[in-house]
Amino acid sequence: DASLTHRTREVQQAMTDTLYGSGYAIQLTAFPWATKDRFPWNLNPMIKKLHSGVRRLTRISDDVIAERRERREAGDGERHDLLDKLLHLDRDDLRGHLMTFLIAGSETTAMTVAWCLYYFCLHPDIQDKARAEADQLGHDPQTIEDLEKLPFVECCILETLRVQPVAGLLPHECVETTALDGKEIQPGTVVVVMLRKAMTALFEGGTQFKPERWLYHDGSGVDRLRARDHLGFGGGPRQCPGQSMALKEGTILLATILRHFDRIRHSSDVSIVRRKSKITHEPENLELVMQR
Image 1 (tube, rainbow, N blue to C red):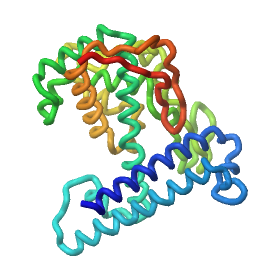
Image 2 (tube, helix red, strand yellow):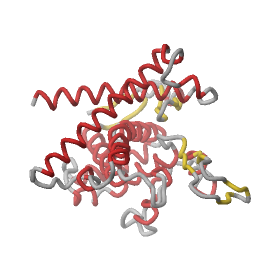
Image 3 (cartoon, one colour):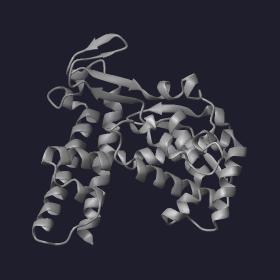
Image 4 (cartoon, helix red, strand yellow):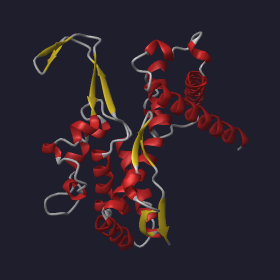
């Protein structure tokens, strides 16, 4: 209906402002005071865009939470989605999760698939193998059973997340005194993991793009134990709650592209592709040619 369409446009604009503003603010990490929402820093149009987007996302999230709780109290039936499962949380925690779903649940999947297509340009043999698996399915994937028949395609997504994680940094705030590599860490200290450096270390496989590393040794399917602890999703008990959905989205999108397009290649020279860092790492100059 009209109200849903209006909210969709509003969310889209708020997300765009937040992402672009955040990408600019990241460049000012050495000057955190310059990103504050106060005079004179908020005269900067990018800083103004950032805080405007965050305020709108906050308001939209609060509205969605209030509407869902009102429906539940009115006995309007339980909806079996992630938001419904988290309604027991207080408003601030629930708002944080909902804003994460909105921001991290779209751009990250799109960037991962884009990077995967970049690696397909570098490794046409891997592209052909993934396409053969998608073609063998016989139709675009629609069910869990379909996805289970696409282990190599999913492994391409997992490997892309390893060698080109869309988030460059993984920050964690220390909540109690602990030690890291022999150094004492005090509560309140933010420890940041450099994801790409950690996941492309030699003992993790280096920078070689090798999707089959995520399969069982006999190639029978995805090694779920290893995939579950993928550092690209944070790992541990506080890992990304959208991991399962993100992998399914990426696998469906990639398999669909492979089924409908052949010979995916760069329009000129794939070596001109560069990693552009905003709030996510996106492939710059990735201009593709596909044959139907």
